[in-house]
Amino acid sequence: MTVTVRFAPSPTGRIHIGNARTALFNWLFALKHKGRFVQRFDDTDVERSRQEFADSILYDLHWLGIFPDQTEYQSRRFASYDAAVDKLKASGVLYPCYETPEELDLRRKVRRTRGLPPVYGREALKLTADERASYEHDGRKPHWRFLLPNFKSNPFETERTEIHWNDVVRGEETVDLASLSDPVLVREDGTYLYTLPSVVDDIEMEISHVIRGDDHVTNTGVQIALFRAIGADPPEFGHHNLLTTASGEGLSKRTGALSIESLRDGGIEPMSVASLAVLVGTSENVTAVPSLLDLAEKFDPAATSRSASKFDPDELVVLNRALLHHMSFDEVRDRLMVLGVSGDHAEAFWMAVRGNLDRLSDAVSWWRILREGPQPAAEIAEEDREFVGQALDLLPEEPWDGNVWKDWTAKVKKATGRKGKALFMPLRLALTGLESGPELADLLPLVGREGTLARRP
Image (tube, rainbow, N blue to C red; front, side, top):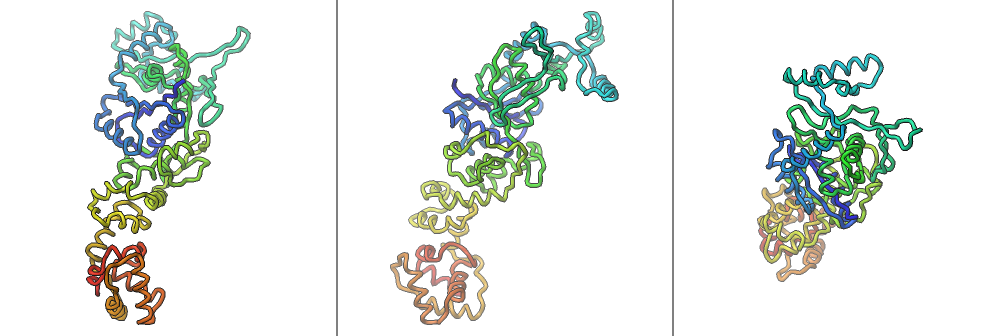
């Protein structure tokens, strides 16, 4: 069997880190099993779905390194859903209901007062043909419910209503259909709710594994029953835990909390996002993984915790720093060029500063410091200004190599008697304007003798 997974967001907003977690779980699962990844847009909500959101989702996925093998839109597949509805009606498991929302709400309240679960009582199944005709004569249009099944394996067994499956993430799972209302599959206006199109698409697209958030566990019980009613074997299912904000709040496309777009605009590397999104809330240590192929080797869906996990953006900066510190110049050459960092010294510059960057864009400020000097110039104490002037008078002649910093400071130490912080800090402030940063032994050859003399306070 070819492993085929799908990521099926509604294009009603930009995806956030929680959505990306689901996409990454599916992509990594496909990578591990040399399978296929279907990008499906569940856009049957024509009022809220937008092509611009679909495009932005694809852009975000590409940025993360996810490139679908196939892209589908539910809004182009209504003929398949219509055919499934006809089949379900013919088999008697999709039945018309005429209750108004107010009537349904009243029935739920009555059931609660009687100590019964507030599920639909299947009153519509008892309607006669004349009663249905009367409702339709009065202008009521039906919504259509799926008749959840009972099961018997032999004539002597009592009826059961439980759906069981071996969850890829959570292990053995059970949903008792008796605790649920028969779900509405088709609204009064003929439009489809989520459940039916999802099942039909999974059948026709030959989805082998459905991996999604654990808020869908109950849906899965219903959908397995619907797969069987349509005459298809259900795929395997996996339900991963959800992510929250650092303060424990849920994520939403509408609020834009932790959107992939905002993380990208904030200078976070895609593998920092992927590493934290996948590894947080699992038994694996959260580390900066350099590629999705490497992450796939570490990925084990069964290692995921059952409880929700907090996603702290501050951890992204730590991972970002670790990734940048190990990136070769070839990996960042083009991006640095876009930022204006290029020329003969670009590679030496990158190797000098990469260990001090939180974000790639931070390199720009160091490039400017090396080329133009500190802006504005650092405030240096009067006695230190005199010392820096004296030190610059001892600056070696060019050509310079990697030993120039060591040779120069040795001469300055001998001439002035200064050592340690008293020796190095005033020179660092004069050269960079900052109290910390890359090794001056690496920076000084890049500044050059003329540039260094120009920093005289």
